[in-house]
Length: 206
Image 1 (cartoon, one colour):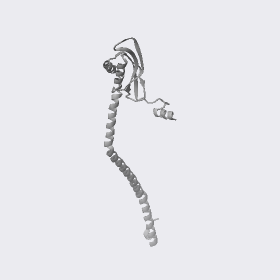
Image 2 (tube, rainbow, N blue to C red):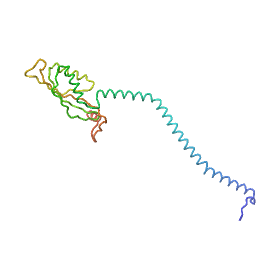
Image 3 (tube, helix red, strand yellow):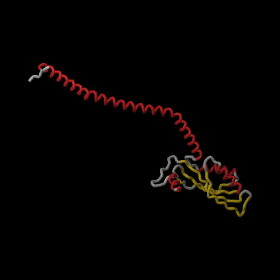
Image 4 (cartoon, rainbow, N blue to C red):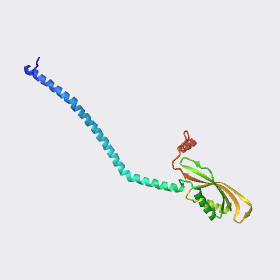
C-alpha cells in the first residue's frame, strides 16, 4: 500500500509536516546539540584549569627571586655549619691542631685516644681522651684556646692531679675528654617507637 501525503486533506498534510518537523528538531537536538554542548562545557572546564595553572605559574615566577635568595641564604648557612661540624672526622688533623694549641700554651699531650663515635639523628659525637702535662695556668689557657676553635670541641670529664715532684712547667697531670662533632651525610631516621626531641620536650613539660 502506497502512502502519499498529497492524497491527505490539507490539515492532515500540515499535521504531518509538523510532526516531521518536531521529529527532525528532536533528532538534531539529541545527536548534535547535546554532544556539542557537552564538548563545549568540557573545553570551558579545561580552559579554566589552564588559566588557573597559568595564574599559579605567574605567581610562582614573581616569587622566584625570593626563592633564590632563600636558597643562597640556606647554602651560606650550610657552608658555615660545615665549618663548625665537618662532614668527615680526621684524627690526624685534629691532633695537629690540639698539639699546636698545647705547644702554644706550654703543655704537653701525653696521650690522645679517640673513642667510638655516638651517632645522633643529624650528627655524630666523637669523644677523644686526652692526657696533658703542664701547669694550672697553662691548662686554663689551653682550654680557652680550644673553646675558640671554629670547629666545635667540648671539654668534659676534667681530672687534675698534682705531681709529688713538680717541675717549673710541669706541676699537674690533667685528663679530660675532648668531644667534637661530625655532620652526617644522611640523617639517621628515628627508630620505630622512639620519641622525637620535640615530643620528648613536650612530655617533660607535661
